[in-house]
Image 1 (spheres, helix red, strand yellow):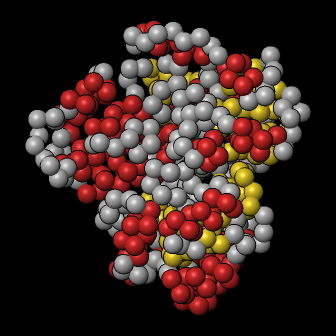
Image 2: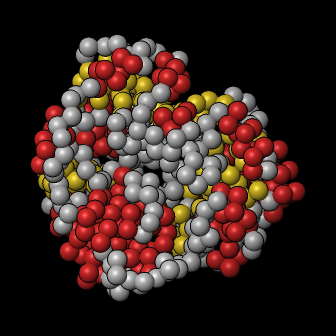
Image 3: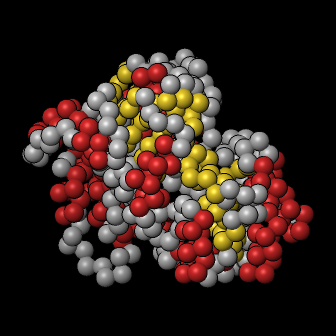
Length: 475
């Protein structure tokens, strides 16, 4: 039976296609529409999903009814449940739509893509219907939760907004800014905002400060990160009351905070963080919350650009120009490029970081991640885990002066490890680069421009090459 899970209506709409215990396809609406974080489905995404089978059942990622009760509580209007109308507009004319709850979708997506049969599941995000953080068993029994208006995710998004960044999109920028700031300067002023009307409180927070260069935003970011980590630790400690397996599944948009994720390794022997733990990933969880089936998981689930992985064309561009794009194979499901829609560069150059940031039109302080052959990772970084294939932890580099392009101001890197089984083509590329240079890693960032979605199709790759002057290899 073909089942589709759908997440849409708020931000980062997505479709996942599941057949029994096989995950066939998963894609982001934004990649097709060109609108970053697009909340709406679109026909091109539906068409790609249809190639893997017309759905016999449709699953929605949350409960419109319970979401409306929270809207009423917060002073918003009740909105008619128009899910079926939305689906019909894209040719999905089915009467049977099955609903779950938002946090249960997150929990299911993580648990049933994990390698565990027993685990604790923690979900932290801005908000679903009412729940803002929750703890579950591997069988999806909810043990504990917090409710709106108390929300770690809303708090972090509110500070993102206060720093003139885009909430629900730029939180990862705030995380990077935190390394430049003093976490204690505004800690006492900021901490009470966790219990307040967050957006109203944070928009007025420190408005009296006259700082035309916005340097104090780094201090805001540092305080927000410190508070987040403290509260995250409390949730981890609470989860240990029920822990019986030593395994943790971490989900929700806040699971993308790779600086804080290291704390989870202090409490659990094994940690699984699905590469797409946010709302797009909940499209998969919408199905799995009902079926409770473990599915084989890979992040390479989206639109396919056919052709052999372009190892030697990439090497040629790296030798001649230091920077090269790759658009090949199936697009990554999640916000991070993991080799198939990537911009690669030599991590050793002193000017590479500034050059790539300029191409991507990003702030100068923004760091980049390395991708490295798994067997060399601990030699070059203080790795807390053997493998980190999805860029989910920040770690200290052992010789940061040698690889300035992938080192943040605090000496850390968000490492991606790769082995032959995970991605043979990417591994071979790193292997050949190592033979040529003695360096077993490359700078790896997403093939996009700030504020725009990651390249999806071969035509997108060609357009990127024409507009930004960077060679994009498709085969």
